[in-house]
Length: 207
Picture 1: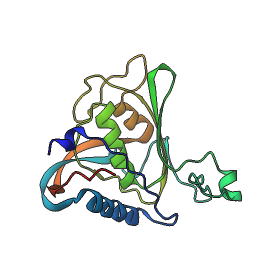
Picture 2: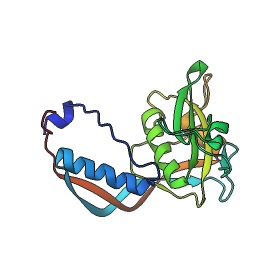
Picture 3: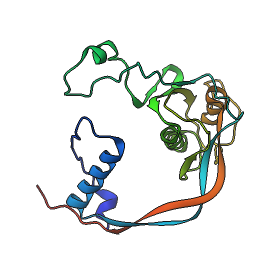
Picture 4: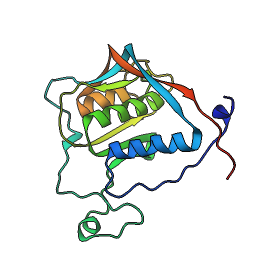
């Protein structure tokens, strides 16, 4: 429907503090079903994806480190602080991105799996680094949780597919930063891909 292309909504919801990511995803699906009458189905077929891989198998770059489980994430807004979260209040788990002097972007991922990191890196790369926008899978072979820092500049008309291009005076491109700082690259691969088809969506009534 036309309204899905032009209408913007702000949805405010607070999940239980102990909810894990799968529970939160189910809550979001339920919310969309109740408020927008969303109905969809999935289809699996062969497709092209981005696959995040290590350039040297088993050897990550200098800007990716195993997450220290002793470091506790900062308390969420509205939660009562504890001695642990007070001591580590500067540690914000998940993803943050900020602009640095000179036009560089700094992406920080804290306490993330490589499956989570691969999707975030693909989204950032497609938006700012000339990477082709495709479904993305993790092919690094790294398990556990990691902390990642990546600094790069926004490309203008970068190389589609994430191929390396030459650095210029303002800093590394996304593809070059991925290689030098994380020891990784995005490669094109064919695999089974799950596609989501929207069967129904209805405009919610005015509140």
